[in-house]
Length: 520
Ligand SMILES: *[C@@H]1O[C@H](CO)[C@@H](O)[C@H](O)[C@H]1NC(C)=O
Ligand SMILES: *[C@@H]1O[C@H](CO)[C@@H](O)[C@H](O)[C@H]1NC(C)=O
Ligand SMILES: *[C@@H]1O[C@H](CO)[C@@H](O)[C@H](O)[C@H]1NC(C)=O
Ligand SMILES: *[C@@H]1O[C@H](CO)[C@@H](O)[C@H](O)[C@H]1NC(C)=O
Image (tube, rainbow, N blue to C red; front, side, top):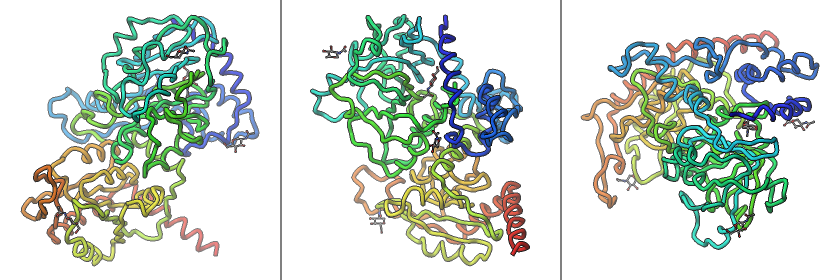
């Protein structure tokens, strides 16, 4: 039985002192945000200070709310392709995609949520999780990191950070139920490795002062994948974003006044670290922060993980024929907005082509100059060659990506940038190195068109024999037939030109221009 209703008066009080200017969401997300907060909506209507009135009382929804109509949701998956016998109808195809990789995934998590440790009173602890402990949230719980003080080896991807009794709370623990769900025991698949040790404490840890540290602000614990690889690290960020939606409960859902605790003892380092600004305004914590101490968390979230079985987006089975996940679109907009990545105005209808050049030992384009020269001949194209490496800030990279129409690169994690392309864009994976579905699927999820090299006899590979792991498509350099390259770029450019959103964007930009000129 749920005893949560006892918490409601507290939430209501918080709403009384709400600071609207902390909302900081992309404009097109505001109506969805307010839709789920009737009390805040009412407050805003009455409040002269509230500048969000035009975003109130809209009947649109993200897609996971229990009363959200299919046609009113953030976006409806496009399924132009055949479904090859997976399901019986077009609608079934769309809902399958929605559940696999869109806000329907969030909806499943919410539906599955079960109390694992029941509170009786507001100061009690609580623990709630979705199936297989993929997502959990807890209140007033204690974690005991005393033993970490005696551990010398660095901790990453470890399942023994906590042991018996190192985590617990004062609440009615349903131990069998909890252990039954702790069946995905692998570091990045679930919270089973940690929560299987959850115990019922004899007293309220915060009230009784049992903790060395009490963390008041909401805390997100992160077990992260590879920080050096954009594809894998963005899997962490996307799952964190999806988790904000799973835990959507009050006006602080998208607040950056939260802590992030990285479940490692390594110093966090990543070329993509700027992305945290989309989620927290505070420095990141790791296990060193608390080693040797007992810590109580008033409000803690164990978010969806990057390597869940049937998770998002690594190894996700995605139904054939569908594309454009609203969840991916919203994630992209959220990150671009919070990181303040500008979208340039257009002064003309030129197609902006960005070619990613690699500074690495493998997968170099041997005849890059020749290819660039060939497409630069077309006066409809604005061609830019870039190297996305440590010499260019990640924000600058995102800025170039956001303002590209055709994005060209050979297989590699940098193609994950496709998540930040505009909706009319084309990703041209020059050569997929025999990894056929990775960026094809990601492009599908984001809803940008994907093309790749088609003619095996028009590409040449150069291997220098230094790679010790045996010959493999990813460990060679390549040269491409110039004419075929130009033909494919033209196909991509044509897609952009014909895309209604591109036409609309250019038209609006032109109008703005002419207004400016008239004013001058
Ligand atoms: C409200 O939030 C904004 C942005 O987060 C902050 O700059 C401002 O100081 C806050 N105002 C108050 C009264 O807390
Ligand atoms: C934390 O763990 C240590 C060692 O396992 C133990 O001695 C200590 O009593 C625990 N602290 C609390 C508050 O349970
Ligand atoms: C998560 O949801 C709970 C309600 O169950 C809420 O009290 C808490 O503030 C939420 N946490 C965050 C970080 O939004
Ligand atoms: C690829 O090209 C780079 C730069 O010319 C070179 O250093 C590297 O050895 C080449 N790799 C292979 C596998 O040929």
